[in-house]
Image 1 (spheres, one colour):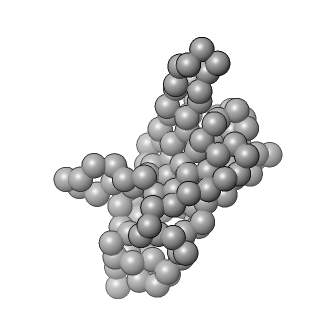
Image 2 (cartoon, rainbow, N blue to C red):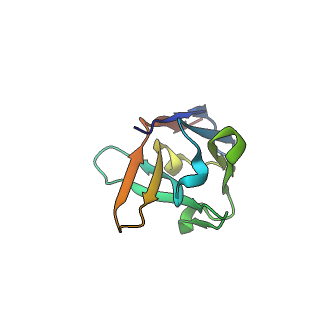
Length: 120
């Protein structure tokens, strides 16, 4: 069983920065894709950023140029550096990991979420 534990959320003023961390209970090198999603009450979960096992990254348009996803395989941790935060970035942020098997199966894992609030 894989566990993902997020940390680093909190309250920050508009224009401020936060760095979220996602620590995995096993080597993250085996995961094909890891990412960050966010969700606000009453809405579905939104994909924010992804990073593949070879380091390719992708972002939703609203965070491009402000957020950066990275991974440290030695620490089994994925990060989301969030700069120039806006009130609309406030949400619960979830870490996600996807493992594809050679037989075509797909296992998806989620963390418990960390709250990010952006307010003056």
